Amino acid sequence: MSAMGRVPEVYARLGVKPVINAQSWVTMLGGSLMRPEVLRAMDEAATAFVDLAELTRAGGEIVARACGAEAGLITAGASSGNLLMAAAAMTGTDRAKVDRLPDTRGMKNEVLIFKGGRNSYDKSFITAGAKLVEFGSSGAAQPYHLEAAINEETAGLAWIVAPFQSYPFPLEQAIEICHARGIPVLVDAAAEVPPVENLTRFTRIGADMVAFSGGKGIGGPQNAGLLAGRKDLIEAAFLHMFNLGSGTVGIGRPSKVPKETVVGMATALELFLESDHVATWAGWRKQAQHIVGRLGNIPGLHVVIEDGDINRQGPNAVIYMESDWKGPSPAEIRATLAAGDPSIRVGGGGYRDEINIVLVNVQPGEEEIIADRLEDILRG
Ligand SMILES: *Cc1c(COP(=O)(O)O)cnc(C)c1O
Image (cartoon, rainbow, N blue to C red; front, side):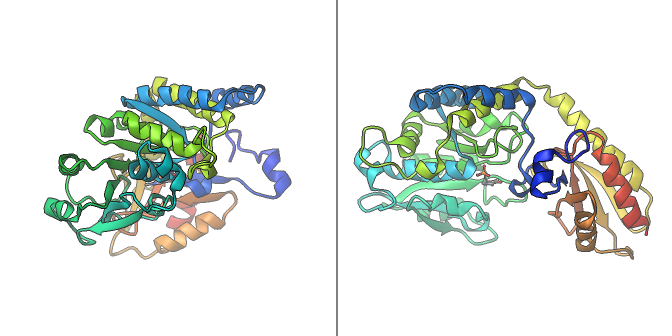
C-alpha cells in the first residue's frame, strides 16, 4: 500500500495491486521505499550528463567513509557485489586478466565457502568464472577444514552473513587463517544493515571486501548496492565494471550503475547515516507491540516480540503455535493473508514454522490492518 493507503495510479494502470509488506526487505516485494529526498536527487541527476567514471569514484568515496574502508564502490546490488568480489579476487588489477574473464585460465579461480553456509544467492560468486569449493559438512566445520581446503588455486573465501545462516566458527578466525596464507575474505552481508554498526563491522575485523544491498535496509534504489574494502581490490572491481582503455567491456558490465542510481544510492546512504536509528527502531517496536497486544490470550498461540538479534530484521511480532493449537496451520494463515484485499505478506518463520511479522516495511497504520485480519483468522 502507499503511505496514503490508496493504489498509486502507475500500478492501477498496469492492473497490479500493491501489497502490505510485513515480510521485510525482500526483493520480490520491492525491497524498500525510497525517501522523497532520494527520489528528488535521482530526478535531478537525470537532468545532466557527467563522466560516469568520475561520478562512480565520487560515490565510492562516500561508501568508503560510511564503511570505514580504504575504498568503496556503488554497485548494482549485493549480487553484483558478490560477482565483482570474486572477479577482483581472481584478477586483481591485472588488465589482461580482467579482459579474460569469465575464462579463468592462468588465474587462481577457486572461491571457498562453508558447506553449511551455502545459500540461494551464492551463484553470484561463480558468475565471473570462479568455482565454489566447499569446506566442512552441511552441519559444521573446524578451522582446520578451512586450512586444508586452501591450495594454489584458492582465490578467496566467500562468507555469507544473513538471517538464519549457520556459521562454522567466528569470521575473525576465518580471516586470521586466510590472511596467514594471503587469501582475501569476501563477505556477503547484503541484508545486515541496520543496525548501522554493521556498515563498519566487517571492515573493522579485517574482511578484505564486503557487499551490502542498497535497496534493503539502507533505503536506496533496489538496483544498487555497496562494496567496501581494500583499495587494490576495489580498484579491480571498478575495472571489471568499466575496464577503461581496454577494447573489451568487463564482466561487470551487465550490472552497470547509471548516474541516477549512483546519486540515489549515495543520497540514501547519507540520509541513513544521519537518521535517528533509535527512534526508527522504537517505531517498529511500537507497531509490533500493537499486533502482539491484539493477539495475546488466544489459546494455543504464543505471541511475542523478538527484537532484532542477528536472526531477525528489526523487531518482529512472532506467532508460535503450541501443541494444543486447533486453528489453521501457518501455511494456511500465510495463504489467507496473501489472498486477501489488500494482500498481506508475512514472514515464513525461521526457527520453527512460526509466523513472523516484520515491521521494517509496514507503513504507519498498516499494523492495524494486519492485526484486524489476523484476529479474524486466528479467533476463528
Ligand atoms: C538480498 C541478498 C542478496 C542479493 O542482494 P541484491 O542487492 O538484491 O542483489 C545477496 N545475498 C544475501 C545474503 C541477500 O540477503
